[in-house]
Length: 111
Image (cartoon, rainbow, N blue to C red; front, side, top):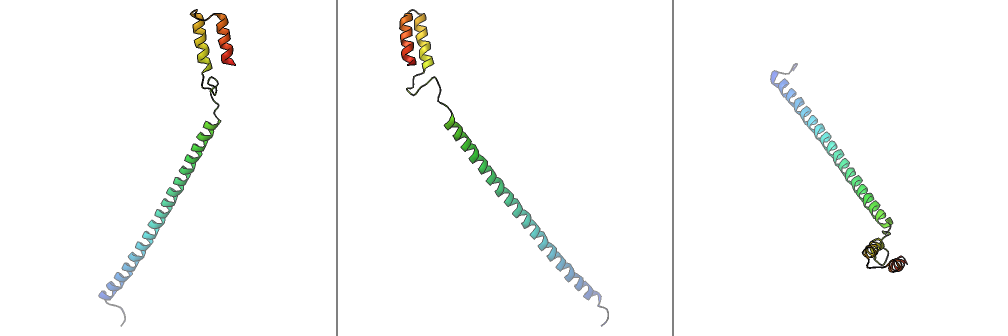
C-alpha cells in the first residue's frame, strides 16, 4: 500500500482543488457583500446630509423672509407715499395744484 496510484492522486488533487475553489468563492462573495454594505451606508449618510442641508436652507430662507423689513414707501395702509408725492409734484408742475395745495396734500400724506 505504499504510494497511491495515478488515479488516486488525481482524485485527491481534484478534491483539494474543489475545496480551494469553494473557499475562494465564499471569500469573494463575502468581500463583495461587505463592499456593497459599505456603499449603501455611504449613500444613506449622503442622503441624510443632503436632507439636513435642505432643511437648514429652508429654515434660513424662512428666517430671512421673517426678518425682512416692510418697504418704507408702503406703510400699513397700503399707500405708496413716494408714488403719491410724485403724482402731487407732477400736478403742481402742470399747474393743476397751487404751491399751497401741494404743501397741504404733502403734509396730509406724511401725517
